[in-house]
Each structure stands twice: as structure tokens, then as C-alpha cells.
Image (tube, rainbow, N blue to C red; front, side):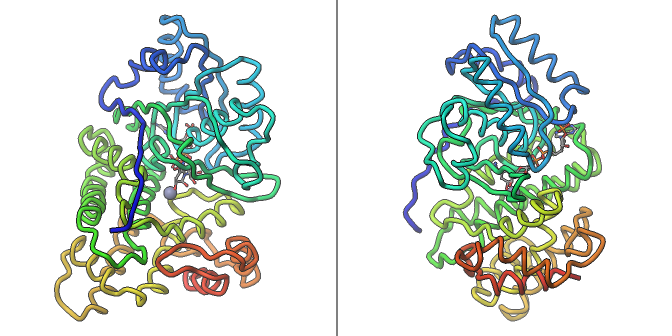
Length: 394
Ligand code: NZQ
Ligand code: ZN
């Protein structure tokens, strides 16, 4: 097992009526002026936002609201949020929504604590983030895991760059997770979220660490099996509280780093996917499943034992050579994604294939002109990235 440091300080309030504790907890974290961030309107339509506003008012907490966060959240709205939250003198930022809203709220929290720095400088590495404002979330969709993660992903629409920032300061202080709030998630977002949770776990399972790491492997495999099992129930009946509870909790566990302790992470499919989302605004989960098979086909020979273990423990594949088991495991995983309605190639994602010229441009951006390698399982050069996009381009 590799050395690691693990600190996931987010307080989780999980279950029915979890959001009823918003005011009490915000107060406990020192908040008195709450800047609420939400998305395109689902929380207005469901009545969740007004319930939270009433609760804050009843408990004497001042608040201001900013809506309009889009999936693949944009930097321009974050900058607007920073300006408004500073004018309001916010001392707590509350996200009400999914990963896009939470990531925007994280960025606004950083901007409020650092009013003289443009927040994007933290993402590009031009400025170092050393302090932030307490923030929390009322989660409405099981997907990105941002409610506990140390990551926040923004899109700079001026430069078409979608980038993540990883820092312990991105960990929210509190997350309210009521599975009932996910009952209204559109089916397509549900399956994209399920895929994202699986990918967060797999991108930690397939790394180049050869040393035994039994507990972390079992944790990751359990998350994957639980999500696969419960996704069938949830897709059939999205109001199945127990299924949605399991999926929601797996979303947080999968991306808080617990599924990768001692093994680190790869995340090259995420980087390949972010380039597709930055340019074409495609849904995050779909960007991942569209490239996963190509990535796996391209790299599995680096460590077929690992892929064979995955095949055996996730799909019960015990016969055949190691190579055959590894390949069958990849096929089964792709069949699973197809079975829940996810695209598994670029043509399925876009309805057409990409030109070779576009693929080269995307690879250039992903690898910063071939100066950076992606991932750890098989660190990908620009040539590798081009090869993977081409493999996925059918
Ligand atoms: O905007 P509203 O109207 O709320 O609708 C949203 C949005 O259209 C809708 N939705 C969410 N909860 C709903 C609901 N609709 C009805 N009822 C509900 N209860 O779902 C749509 C997608 O929302 P979004 O927040 O974009 O989804 P998700 O949680 O999948 O977040 C995706 C974003 O997170 C980033 C992705 O790249 C993408 O930008 N990620 C963030 C990570 C992190 N911070 O740790 C890690 C991930 O790997 C990922 O990169
Ligand atoms: Zn993801």
C-alpha cells in the first residue's frame, strides 16, 4: 500500500428531512449571512428552495440567492456570484443542487475569501489558494460526488477550457443528503450520474500500483457492485427510496478518495471527457462512457491481471486465460453502460464521428501541447490520446 493522507471533514446529514437541519448547521459553522447558489430551476419547481429560504428566515439568518448555474458550470456566473456575495458580505455559501451548482459555490467561496484574486487564477495555477469561506450543499442528484470531494470543475467559456482544481479547501463543511430530493432527476441525468459514480471508482481501481491493497480493492468493488445492482431498481422506479439511498451514498464514498486510499488515482478518462465537454458542452457522465472502452482496450495489456481481477470480482468471470478474462470484463462493462442507455463511442455521443483534425486539436489541449501526460495506469502522451479518441470514434 502506498502512503497516504486522508482527511474528509465534511459532516454528512443523510436521510429523509436532512435539509430541515440547514439553518441549525449553518449557524453551528458560524454562518449568519448565507449566499445560496442554485441551477436552472429544478429546486424552484420542487419547492426545495423556498422551503430552505423559509427555514433561514425563521431562524434569523440573512440570505441572498443566485440562480442560473448551467451543467458544465461557467466561470462568468461564478465571477458574478463572487461580486454579489462580497457586496452581501456573505459568510457562508450554500449550494442547492448538483455537482455544477456545488462546484460554482466552491469557487464563489474561494472568491469571497480572496477578493483581490480572480478565481480562475486558482484553477490555472497562477495563484495559490490558501483560504476559503465555509460552504455546504443540499444535494439533489447522485453523481459528481462534489458534496465531499476535494475537487471543483469549472468551464471558462472564453477559452473553452474545462478544468478541475484539487485542494483540501474544496471539501465542504457539511452536506445535506435526502435521497427523496433525487426522485425528480430526469432519467438521462440519473444514468449519467450512475456512470460518473462508477467511473470515479474505476479511475481509482485502475492505477499502476502493483502492491496489494486488499481493503481498498474490496471497498471499490463493493461500491461498483452496489451501484450496478441498485441502478437496475432505480431506473425501473426512481422513487425507490432504498435504491436511491444506496446510489446517493455511493456517490459520496466513491469520490471522497476512500475508494483509492493507498493506490492513488488515474483519471485519464475524465481528462479526455473534459475536453469533449469543454468544446461540445456534453453531459459529464456521457463524455466518460464514450471513451472508457477505447481507453481500456488501449491500456489493459499494461496490467491484464488487474483487469482480470475486475472481471472476476465484478462479473464473476473465472474461466479462460487472463487475457480472455480481462477482455471479457471490458466487454461486460461496456454492455452494462449500453444497458442503462449510455453512449459507448464518440459517434453515439455526438451522432457523428469527429474529424482527425479535431481529434488532434483535442489531444493537443488535453496534453498541453504534449508537455503533460494524463493518468497513471498508462501515462498518456498526445500520441496515446489521439489513438484512444480514434479507437472511440466509431
Ligand atoms: O440546473 P437544475 O435545474 O437544477 O437541473 C439539473 C441539471 O439540469 C438537473 N437536476 C439536478 N438535480 C435535480 C435535477 N433535475 C430535477 N430534479 C433534481 N433533483 O440535473 C442536471 C445536471 O446537473 P449537474 O449539477 O450538472 O449534475 P452533476 O451532479 O452530474 O454535476 C456535473 C458537473 O460536476 C462536474 C462535472 O464535470 C460537471 O461539470 N464534476 C465535479 C466533480 C467534483 N467537483 O468533484 C467530479 C466529477 O468528476 C465531475 O467532473
Ligand atoms: Zn466525474
